[in-house]
Image (cartoon, rainbow over all chains, first blue to last red; front, side):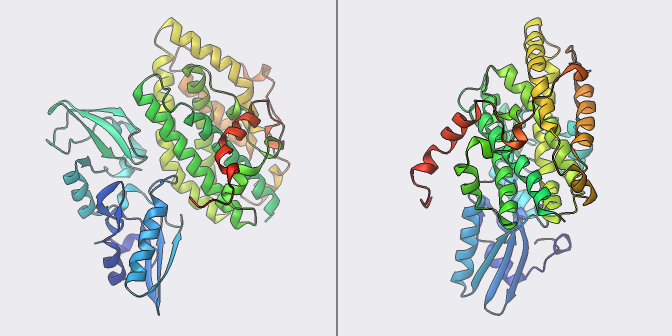
Length: 167
Length: 251
């Protein structure tokens, strides 16, 4: 579950459990909750208030995810009030352990701790291959098929793979 | 707090990012390597997203909707520096411009993390992480190609010499510098320029490129007050072509 200690807003457990079914359209195994983009979830009478924050400012999937959150809330009989905010900016550290495990299973290397990235960019030079767990890997491109992914090559299993970028 | 001063700052940043994002996007399908094609396209998406977030802040301060602001103004209503509007040429030109602009942009956002206008400080905290990848990209290639072959060094040097006056235009002083500083919104263009020169010098010192003599350059200013080169209007015409067909369309 989401580490509520990291969040500044209240997180209603039941509302969060509904949001589990909304997935990132570009990574369909990862729920918004596991991705850590829900920064507030509260129920106030008949209103369900959700605050989201994008992984990347220019993420084109945000609007779709917002609509899906609204649909899920409506389906449960509440009036949705969904806002997007940078009040609590997203970082890859917000991803839950469950989310990281789901990413790896999906074939995407999960992000390392971002504090290390800011300290030393050399950490980007290698990643652990999600297929064979090999560490003899090479950063091919810090930019990938979506804003949140980088491209690597694994010299052990000779396959290219992608990493969810630490930010 | 003066909204005029804040709005001027937001407009110039947003316009820089929108116009530069558009120029970056023109590399989509034309990059010298597939990786560079992807890199410039990704950076374009980041920049345009960041510009939209800034236009959204302006909207909250009473300006029009982000799409209206982005797609319906003419060149003389844009506040971007002229550096970002120059047409792409060969890859070396775009790479040097990317290095000069993104070094300044990353420093600007870093300074804005202390901004007294909370929504902007919050956005700055977010954007900072994304920009690490942009400056990493620029620095990596400048260092590599700036020390590689006679041709690569020569090409970068020529672009650097040509772009230096335009780069200095990024720091064109605002009429609100004192006010922005007094209100603790932004430390000002002068402070940013000094930090930028240091950062540029630090990277170039690791190459065989020669630093332009800043003192003898005449900064290419005017962009911040709507005086642009002849290249901006055609860019805006192309960028807004679809929007203008049906401004009220639902996408």
